[in-house]
Image 1 (tube, rainbow, N blue to C red):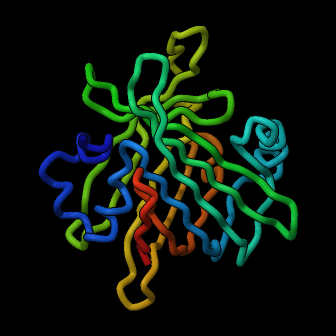
Image 2 (cartoon, rainbow, N blue to C red):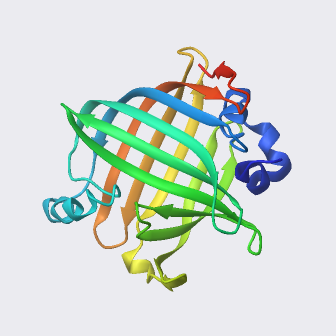
Length: 214
C-alpha cells in the first residue's frame, strides 16, 4: 500500500532522495524515530509569543526560543474511525529540561486528492498541504487553505488569520543526516515561528525489523 506522501507526489515521489523515500514510506506498521538538534528556534513578537502560551497544553504552540535545542521526532501510523491511515507527527523540543511539543496528524483526502494536516491534541487547527520535490531531491511542503475543525465540520479561516507554513526536508550526504527548515508566517504579524536543524533516525517496519536512515 502506498503512503499518503506517495499518493500526493505520484510519479515524482521517485525523485526524492532515496533516504527521504524510505523516511516518508509511512504505511502499515511503519514507525520512524529521529533525534537531533535545532540550530535555532526563532520568530514571533512578544505579544505573539504570549498568546502561544495558550497552545502548550494542546501540544500545538510554545513561546520558548533558543539555539542548539535538542529535538526528537516520532512518526507512526494508525487508522481513524473511517479506517483511513493517519500519520502521527509528534515533535518534542527540550529547552533545558522544559519539554515543549508541536504535534499533528496527517491523512489523505481522496475526494480532493490532497493531504490534510490537523494540529494539536485534540486537533484545534486544520490545513491542506501542497507537496513537491526540488531538483536536489528535497521534500517541500506548504500549507494552503486553513480551518477550525469543529463538530466534524471545517470552519474556514480568513487568510488574514492563516499561519502559512513552508517546510523543506532534505538529506545531507556529507553529514549523513536529515536537515529540516520550517517557517510559519502570518500576513499581519510576520514570522510566527521558525526553526532549522538536523537529525538522524531509524525506521522500523511491522515485522519488528529496523532500518537505520542515517
